[in-house]
Amino acid sequence: MPRQPVRAGADGRTECSYLPETARSCVQLEGRLVARCRFTVRSLRACWWTRTRSLRHDRRVTKSSYHHGDLRATLLTAAAEQIAADGVDAVSLRALAQRAGVSHAAPAHHFGNRQGLLTALAIRGYELLADELRDARDDFREMAVAYIRFARRHPGHFDVMFRHDLLRADDPELIAARTVSGEELRSGVAQLGVAESARPATELAAWSLVHGFASLWREGALTDSELGGADPEQLARQMVATVDFVGAKM
Image (cartoon, rainbow, N blue to C red; front, side, top):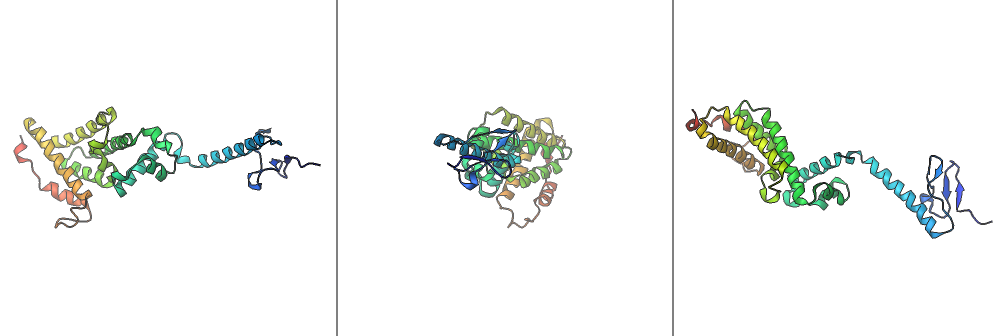
């Protein structure tokens, strides 16, 4: 009597005797057989394909952090981490996919290309910066420290935000996010009581002060200086306390 290609297993499942032991078990859903193996190559392949697809699906669903909207945030976080560790030149869509553990097509689906990825990262950076500045908007000195705190906490974002050669400069979301963070910084400068005519120059001076400090710290240029220390925020407070925009006052 010829061996039957499909037989009932001990657990009630159907098994395919022509497939390897590890691949046997044509899964049954709601009492209906997904694939029935017969004496044909085509049906054997169908059985194998059905089981393999099921296993691949099981592996995908275990990665809960990649579901729906989480994947975009996961990719941005991975990109920021890589930039902070290795620099912006190390970032590519392929490298990002490997770092995040997703398919190579996933980053392209969300960002289009490398420029789109970096633009999205810069937008997120400006949003985070605005949040930091907003909490200290009533005191310019605290706002200066908040700016430096942002650069310290989010170095991957900070390194990209002002690299206009890498970004889509005309992106509406980028322009809007940059404008909001700029308004928060200007509101802090307004607390200094400067004359209206001197405000643009004062805003530029204030931004240059805090951004320059943050950049020097990020590049490690302050670690060996006489004023250098382990806490950049404490050092920033000392620096800002010595600054007085006397010529700009009303």
